[in-house]
Length: 237
Image 1 (tube, one colour):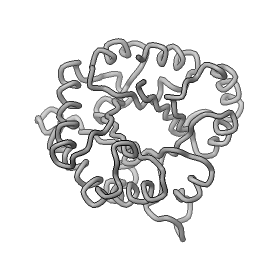
Image 2 (cartoon, rainbow, N blue to C red; image 1 turned 180 degrees about the horizontal axis):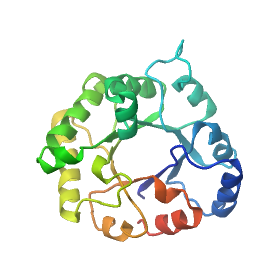
Image 3 (cartoon, rainbow, N blue to C red; image 1 turned 120 degrees about the vertical axis):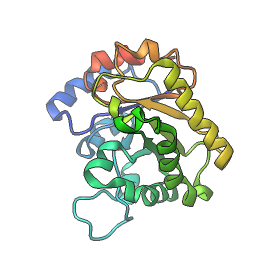
């Protein structure tokens, strides 16, 4: 069964989430993980849903005001964390801390969804694969002893596709994900799941489902409406 991750980003508030939860209760399978804002993790956790953090600090604890300690999040009950999302890389220079965040999460038995992806100019210049390999190396090389085939999941999110409504063609997407899997196997002897993220919605999910190499989805905006989200995940095999 494919993994489905619902990334709410900085969206939705308590009244809306109460309506959301009422709409999905009893209709969500074990392959779905919710990533709401950290303020609302408890609303999902209390109803028995799997929850993850959208981010963690590059430090385990200490004097970093406003950051999220993986120890505290693990105590709270998260099972997964996203690391290296393009928005964190762009606005908070997260590429600098990816390897430390992966290390902290895995040492604390929190599974990592590692986001990788190329910018539009890199895609247009045919640099997609070199960019992805560089991002994989930075996160994996120093943490290889901690990584298993079950505790690290790759999310391929072409930056130019996030929130734009554009997605790679079936052929390009399949080739790219197969290249990622091949590199992981040849370079690190890892057989990791690779999710796709970037404008996944009801209009394109059936086409994406034709890409055999996709192991699941990291879904942003299309996860915010409960009825549409339920319709979308019901189309995933």
